[in-house]
Image (tube, rainbow, N blue to C red; front, side, top):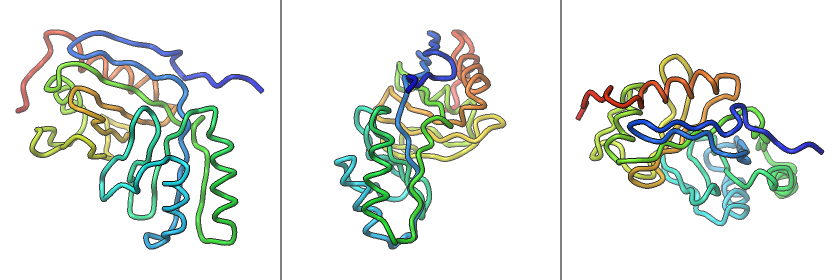
Length: 190
């Protein structure tokens, strides 16, 4: 079996913040009815985290769960464990109304790191989200548009944001993030 590769081979840029395409990440979509506690328990069992509350992330060091909608969670695991995690969850949920799908190869993930206000500034330039600290908290997940494409992002901690997009638009998203992070281009939104 071949090794997974990222769309941009780990590209990075230093500007107002550091923009980095992270290494391969295991990403599993769990779709189930909102009240399907067995499915939520299967997700928490494989990640060792709690099921996140509305619009929240329960992620640490690339492992955890993102709340994506009332009936959807995105489960993050090490890339090498994504296939076995899917098989384990499917076995636990056999006969139940739930979808477990490995989307690792269909997504790209970027990390923004730097001064906490500059990380927020770069995201505010591209997404219609109020990024002020009292409106967008650490651990909050936002599914939104980044310029013209769908994306989701969260602050793992102040000064560190992770962003997921479709692999097919990874170059476009990377270029957007780098352009927004160019030194001297900061216009304070807050």
